[in-house]
Length: 493
Image (cartoon, rainbow, N blue to C red; front, side):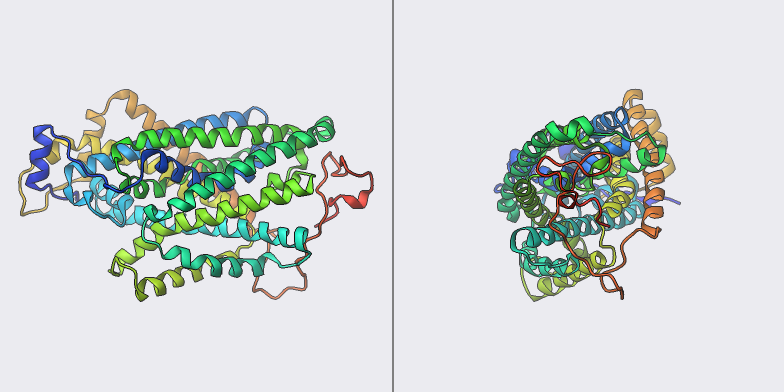
């Protein structure tokens, strides 16, 4: 059965055959450096706190290899996404104007209508999951801050709806161009937080480094770490939306390279030194392992601000996708307010149902991030590139042209260079294997008895945050501030 690939207008055909390069940027759009900052804001928050634990699970050798391979591979696939969008804008003029769902449209032009539906569903689930992770992380952090600084025991379950209500008005903005203030703020808060975390690690290293214990390598833990690594360098589902709002979309590769370089430099110091300093005493969040209370709380605050701002960015494409589906008007109005409030309600409900961000992060990383950040960019680029001559050769403006997916696959195999084909297929195979196993492991972890119960589920336990230090060492009892065992929080459940 054939899949519709779409038709090419005569104007697009004439431009393609004449060799001209049409302008399709936004005159007042994002500068390529600003676009890079959007990408950093999309990726960096959860990875800053979770990467050291992933490093611990992956091991001394496996961790650095994973970080380097995934960072390089995902930067390459970001370049492919940018290349794909440029191809689309040159062939189909309709995409030079406002497009609410660029990633699914990319799938449609590359592999047909069925692939557009699959991509749309995958991106929506990923954005929904990422929004849940960032809401949980920021709620958990602010809950700890409320105890540490103000002595107010506001549980994570209560903090989730509080944050969502305060954040809701910001989500009413139209496009990434409306969020430039948020990106600048997110970059500043992330940088400050990373500096504080690094200072805290170095201060603890004198006492904790000598007693640090690296656990034995376990294949199951290594596999589970892939989900965190992929999540930390993922976020590609938003990239076409960012590129679409750029002043010069053809410079998106510059934005991607700069963004991945910044994120890599942010991750490496705290990941490596945090792993070496704390070892097996690491918590899900590296910040919880820092023993200086003022550094811990300040870094927590800035990371929470980053997560909240990032939430406003990642939820925007999700809102636009469904607004397009239900044919809601583009301008601001009561329909936008009602719909986006409805979407926020379901994000809050999901966060209350799964109140631990770590396993959810691994699940999203192993499924949707693997699809949108590795598999789909490679496939779409191969098919769009191989289909060039076919689309240019057709000159029928009245009838949609069709070509079978099997025929397209033959063209991919025959027209793609062996080097590019091998590289893309290697990334796809690795993503399928690691993503599948990581997903299975995350599901087992979520279904286990140690996973937290929903906030609305009747429970005899009461969540209480104790203002105690998480000490280091094999027995969690080493501190640079006190020899009193009660000073440490190792006994906390």
